[in-house]
Amino acid sequence: MTGHAGMPPMKIDLQRIRRNRKGRRIDRQRKRAAQCQGDAPAPLVLEDGRYRFDAAIFEQAIRDDTRLFILSNPHNPTGNVWSEDDLRTMGEICLRHGILVIADEIHQDFVLAPSRRHIPFAALDPRFAAHSLTCTSASKTFNLAGLQCANLIISDRRLRDTFIRQLERNQFNVVNLLGMVATEAAYAQGEPWLEAMLAYIRANQQHFAATVNAADWGLRVHEMDALYLAWIDCRPLGLSAEALEHFMLTRARIWFDKGQKFGAEGHGFLRANLGCPRAVVDDALARLAGAM
Image (cartoon, rainbow, N blue to C red; front, side):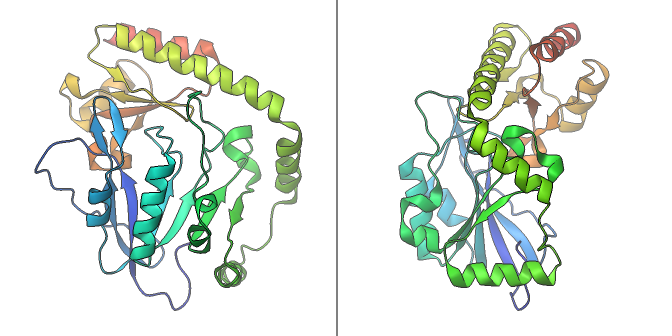
């Protein structure tokens, strides 16, 4: 999505996680992605077990050649459901610096906190819509990833035409027909199933967090407003990322997602998938108890 003919090398702002330690420098990571030279992390701040957006940190991450901001809404892996104020602040800063926003809203259906609701970034302001691309899909919500079908909403006609031309150049312009039919069926008829699934995931999250947080294991599961995941703080164990992974694989016999895949500040954290039967969650808890 980020590469097209004639586009100069650029930097991308990504929402990263970070601990609230004064004076800590967040180094820019280099990645190979299309024609992008690298990315400038826009870290979140962890305070009192919750992550928050900091406008000053966000704007400081912008460089002269920053052209894209990838917005994770809701945020993966922290489960943050961004407030209207946060989204408007991000949007205004991006407009001021001429930055295009790619709003990844694939987890929009997984808002679990009754007090929170998903707010589409582009819906807040016509200017935001004109300078953004919104990515959604039924793949996460209805487990249709194998059908390779997604939605890309581009309000600005010039930007949309440019993107379509690039799809044609890359020969990605043919959509999986079965995926389209399945997506339409899911959106049209899947709401009762979705509501039941969300209730099940919510109960899994509460059960997993309550069990881990009540145990004397040195682990802490952070509260999440969205997603079907758990974000586990393992830093009190004092293990390196490699040692933590080895411990979980060999002692607990559980394969978690490594926190550092989400940035340097993810070291010491693990991500668990709770979109599964309760029996699988209980098995994981039993393995953790045996290992700890």
